[in-house]
Structures are given as C-alpha cells and as structure tokens.
Image 1 (cartoon, rainbow, N blue to C red):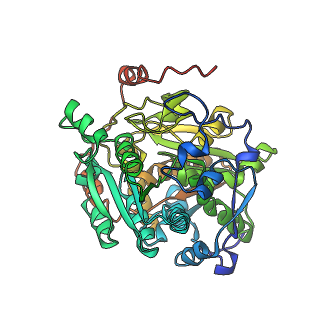
Image 2: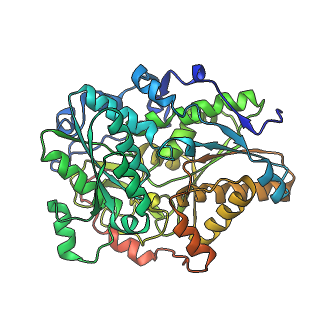
Image 3: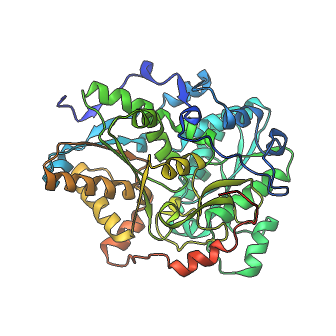
Length: 455
C-alpha cells in the first residue's frame, strides 16, 4: 500500500466519458409517467423544460457517453479531485481499517454539484437557451448552477428552500456573486408558491415546493429551461466522474474498496460515487454499499416504493421511487440538501434489489462524527456530508471490534464553511434530534397519486 495521504491524478487522467449504469441495472427502470394521463412520458412532454441532448441522456442505453471538450476544460479548474487517506482519523479511532474520502469540496462552489451544473449549462446554451430556473435546498446546487451559468453567460433564477435561505445566508451571497437571482421558497411569484402560502403562510418550504416553483417558472417562459441538481438519470450520469476517478486512485494506492459510504438526499453525490462500482458488485465482487439519510426525512428506510411526483404541486412526471409522499414537509434540520421526499429512481432500483443498503441517523451523532473528522483531518464537512462521515466512523469502529483491515471509502460531497451556524448550534447544545413520526409519514403517503402501477 502507498504511504501517501493524497492520491492525485493528473488532468490528462480526467475521465473522457461518463458511465451510464442503465444497461447494467438489476432490472430496467420503470418509465416516468405523464402526470395528466398516467402514460409513459415522451420526449415531447419534456421539451418545454429540457434540451433534446439531456432528454436523450435520460433514456440512453449506451454504456459510455462522451464528455464534451468544453465541459472537460471547465472540469479541469478543480478536477480530478483528490482521494485522501484519512490516517489521522484512523489513528484517533484506533481502527485497523483503511479510511479514504473523495474530496469534492475542492470545487469553486465547494461541493460535487458543478459536475452536472456545468454539463447542464453547456447543453442548454448549445440549444440556444440563455435562462435556467432551479431549486436548491442547502444552497450547494443553487451556487453550483449560478457558477456554471456565469461561465456560459447565462442567467440563473434560484428558488431556495426558505428555512435554508434563512439558515445559510452566505450560500445566498455566493449565488449573488455569480449573478444568480435567489428567492426564498415558497414565494408569491408562482401559482405553486401562492397555493402553499395560502394553506400555510408560515411554511418554511421543502425541496418539493421549490421544484414546483422552478418547473412552473421554466414551463411558463419560452426563453427559460429547468435544471435539476439531483434525482434524474442524466444528473447521476454526469456525477460518475467521482466514482471513475476514485477507481483509478484506488488502483494507484494498490487498494480496493470493501465498503463505500455516502449521504443521500436525492442521490446525486452518492450515485456519482457508487455507480461505477455497481457492475463489480453485481458480478460478484464483495463490496458493501451504504446510503445514509437523516431520520427526519427517512425516504429509503421508511418510504414506499411507488410512483409519485417529484414535486409538491404535481407538475413533474411521476417516477417509481421510494417516497414519503410529495406533500411531505420535513422539519428544518441543518442538512437542507437531504430534505427531499423521494430519491433517484436509479438508486431506488438498487436499494430494492439489495445492491445498496440504506441507513438513517439523527443530527447530533452526525455532528459529533463531523467534529471528530474536522479535529483530526482538519476539513469541516457540510451537514449533508457529515451523514456520510458518521457512516464512515461507524464502519471503522466495527472493524476495530472485529480486527478486519477493510478499505472504507467515503464520498466527501462538500465542505461546511458556510454552515458554521449549524456547528455553533451543536457545540452550544442547541441542536435537537428529530425522528419523523410514523403517523405523519402515513398521512403524507395517503396523497400518493392513484395510478395503477401493478406493484
């Protein structure tokens, strides 16, 4: 094994193509359904908000899709990102395990999100679109798309979940620096936002609500398209640069992953890390793949595997996924990027077939692991990323008990430099744990659309 702390790839080793997992899934994905008819979505249904290139990527059965040179050139600003051996954390835990984290926090916006933001901006610009509308939870996606739009001389409108808009003002400032236009969602700018405010004037918002507003904005303006930061197939496709680089870096370290851990909100960073390893696992390689989510939004661990809308207002296509119900409004935990009622259909397919194992944690143990990580490795994880760090620590401690020398790899999806108020709440004892009540989940699930799915 190498004794390096950082395993670095040169720019020439940046992946030349994204890996498309669709042909290698245990079972083909069920088609998304038109919300008006219940019939499978057609390209014409999606053209009001997406360019043809992304629509084709959504359904492609090609295993590899070339990364455009203009996108690769921008990737080189921060990619390939380092794979870091967390030796000081290993020592602090007293574990025989080898711990690695893939540091996506080195990108200009500080997270993995520009891997797809740059690609989506590029394809929209090529299609003649100059305005993009989107939602954001914690602000990582909104800042990434603002960054990408600025590079392609495009305008970006962001509907930011209100609780995060208030909790994370510096994410908003970051978007403004890149000329993003940011509104706290729900707003009075859209029919969807006004309907939510009429029912609940004190609504603190959710990703589902913000998605409704962004989709409506795009659908009602001919010069505007919609960009989504997670969930959809083409988003996870673009993120596979994470896992592809990680595989090369592990080879350089003369190592191989025994366990892969990541946090899950909609599934983008997690999918980007694990999808290039899926075929290895389904072909018989012994790899444990663990998806970590918050107990306050337990989609994979407590949701139903059903068709549901991707947004609150029921404007998006219906997707077959684990869901808590599109009307679900989670509490205002600090990990705003994990507060989504559904998950990527690709990820849900892998959970259903046992390729991925889900796990849920409350806030305080997550922040405890994050502070330990920051005090040993020196890097402060975002609250979302901290869920993955908690999973990494727990698996390392299991190896301490068993004496197993496993290689555990974590996707470090973003830094927490804009989340210090959350750390202040934890350090001062103000952070409250919250496990979403089963009766509230069941209440939200009653609103699932009544299309027959045969499931």
